[in-house]
Image (cartoon, rainbow, N blue to C red; front, side, top):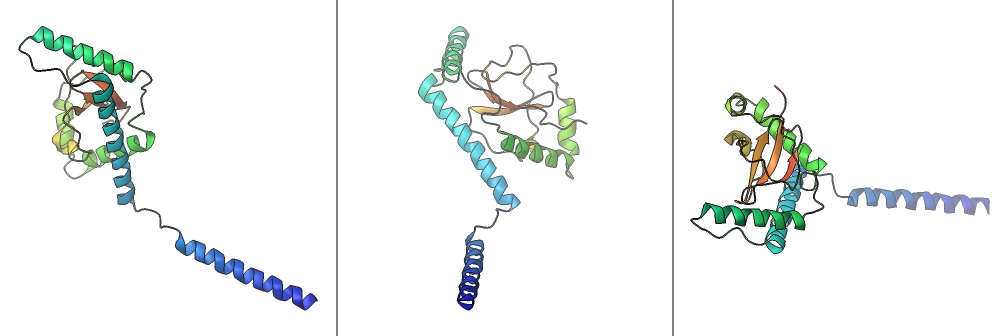
Length: 195
């Protein structure tokens, strides 16, 4: 009987080892860094698409062309108000999640620290820097404050945006800016490394 138990235990261990090796061989390999970055960029694009669908479905279309500056301003303000109401619970990090923010910071740092990093750094230093501005998601970009544009070499490292949205720099922060309602959609604090 003792021999029978030893044989059963031996068979049980053999089956257990074989099962664990089969399970280990069927697990998907971890994605490479490039694949992981591609998945993060896709997540960002999906979140941007979701925002634009909400903007269109809940807040309406962009203002109609007009030659009246007052009428255009009224249409923009009306769109912004409807959009703020539709996104009343919006907060920093809804689009720029921690994982997406880290991806953007890596891309920006690689561009600024790379062999051609001097050009975008000069561009950032010569632009009219915006400092001391308190950013708030779902709020208008303050009137009279210049919109600092992104150096082209930085833009090439970041996911392409639909025509309604732009990347902008405020101090060391990167904002996702909706041009028509003049609204801050989301932002990444400290996205631009200090000099």
